[in-house]
Length: 500
Image (cartoon, rainbow, N blue to C red; front, side, top):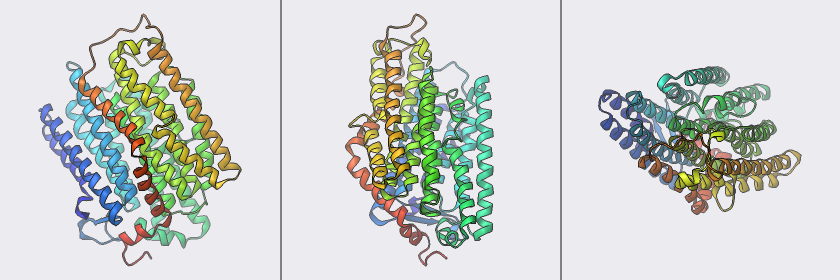
């Protein structure tokens, strides 16, 4: 089964090359893209099952053994992220195909979209599987290069302006990351994550802490952790709905994944735990207060995205198995729900011509299915029982209570307040956009394309189903968290002779 590990990266790259060659045949492009991502999803599920049964799966690229060669590692955390990201990217692709068919006649660079989207998918998967810091950097650059193209599709003024901000901020984060990689190599002589577990432990405390903080800054920008999150609400809302959805669902979570991986594997313990918890609390509060002040659904959702990143960082900052279990579970939940809500905002824009709350009203009567989809997803995001959002938040709050102390208790209170304010924000959108009387300025468009609605329904069902599979999912996240804290299973799988 180890030979399957590179496929989630290789298949989308091959698909990207093929769709680029098929630029003049949109139907064939769509078929290739859907086929590649469907196959990647099947492979990801197989990898998750095998990683659960027998531990981390490792592939030495080019036959060069670690730590000299490039290594791809599919442990339970990486495999779980592959499954969720593959499911989400497939649904978003189907949604974008439906939207493209609905916008026939508009100037839309379809030939560019498919290869770029597949490169983005390959970059995300490569980041999840990377077994060394430089390959993790390569994964980030693959997905960022593709995202630079996607965020400026059609080249409108607002998209170019916000896209420029996105490019500048992420290039800065990449520079910090690359400098950090160079410093880690200068200090330890290796970039292999398994080997770094021993060599970083041998460094003086000040040097080790400096490297840890530099990596946290780089990943904090990419994950949109306060105070490094100001760029996100201005960058995402102007992009097309499918692009915004996949950015919101996945790109920030790759940053969170990198924080989880490096903080547990390379820098175990509570050395930066208090700093992470303070950042988590501020991220939750600043993000949700920003959402309260918004009058546009897309911008509102962008601020809730920032806010709920704080829950995940809270779990990491606790540095306990229970905290990591809650963080990983919440990452899975949030990827699904946040992507779904941005797709629903695209349906609202398609149906009513705007996402500005001041121009909306009566959508529950005009598009009842969209109303139901939004209500279910919004309540899930707010953490209303028995949805997965409630289960994830409850796990995190219980982990905070178990640790105890002023800071964890403060974070528990901040998490509860953030959840209530999220419920307020979701209820406000529902009351204004869906429940109140229609505004005179709303001009209904043609019926929604079936493929757009179907892809959104599939993600809503996936989000709801997390409640029904919460037991097995908590089992997987629990074992993944235990392995992360222990570190030994990962190190032994990559370096059978031990790290040195």
